Amino acid sequence: MKLLEQVRAKLRLLHYSLDTEESYTRWIERFILFHKTDTTWRHPRDMGSAEIEEFLTHLARERHVSASTQNQAFCALLFLYHNVLEQPLDRIDALRAKRTRRLPVVLSREEVRTLLTTLRELDTREPYALMARLLYGTGMRIMECCRLRIKDIDFERRQLIVRQGKGDKDRTVPFPISLRTELQDAIRQRARQHHDDLARGFGRVWLPDALAVKYPQAARELGWQFLFASKTLSQDPRTQDTRRHHIHEGCVQRAIHQTVKRLGWTKKVSCHTFRHSFATHLLEGGADIRTVQELLGHADVSTTMIYTHVLERGACGVVSPLDRL
Image (cartoon, rainbow, N blue to C red; front, top):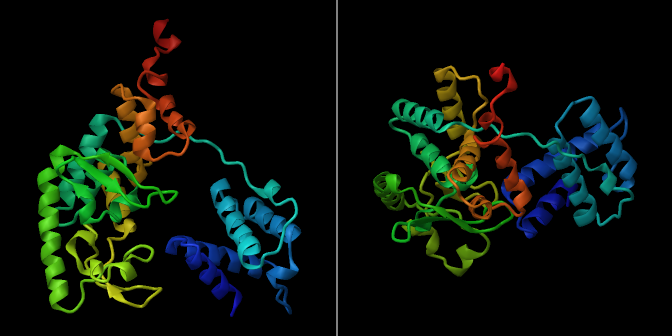
């Protein structure tokens, strides 16, 4: 078995996501190409910490990648040597780049209202406006919103369940009551689409872990379907099965970017900005920081503390001494 195939097999055995699989194999391939000479290829087993350090240094000094990108490459190579080649490395922890903490971009309530209204006017036939309101109303990450399944919307208990979030953790987030009717309409529309898929011999959806084996019929049930589904059927890159996957996160990001550009704003706004604004506005409203930590799914409260630096009672709540002259 070729090396990259071994890497993919190991990643799937350990239940890594498809995005991680693609990312890790790309970095390993780039690492091998970096150390290729005109006449010879060097197998990773014949290299070690020195070659990894040289590659990471090249990324930082020549390619000017960010600390997070450099650490992603580091994690890919660490996985290769520890889990695939089972080859120990010396001084490997010293190669991890130190990440710089940046203050998040946060919108005011009026800016959020303007952005959501404009997005709704521009995308009348697409679910992007509804997804953007969910991002702000629940604090979900963009992929958590894209992967939202119908069964995880609890109208009675007024909550949404985020399954397999970052760190493979489940959590509950608040249900925006103002979106009840729109979500019910979206479910009815999705049910009609799913009925048509079943009539055409399709209608199966990807299920995590071994649920497809344990519950063979679950993949055809409406509850397991993604609420925000792609317009087209696609082929699963791992099993080659034809399914209707969730909408691509890039479509939502593009819609928000175009809306911000249309508004003429200079702020760098992305899907994640809604999550930052959700947390900041909760804290401004008097919510306990531990509660916000749980809603965001942060493992450590120190991560949530970043939002205390952008509260209205912080820098923008202080009168500049220049204005007192």
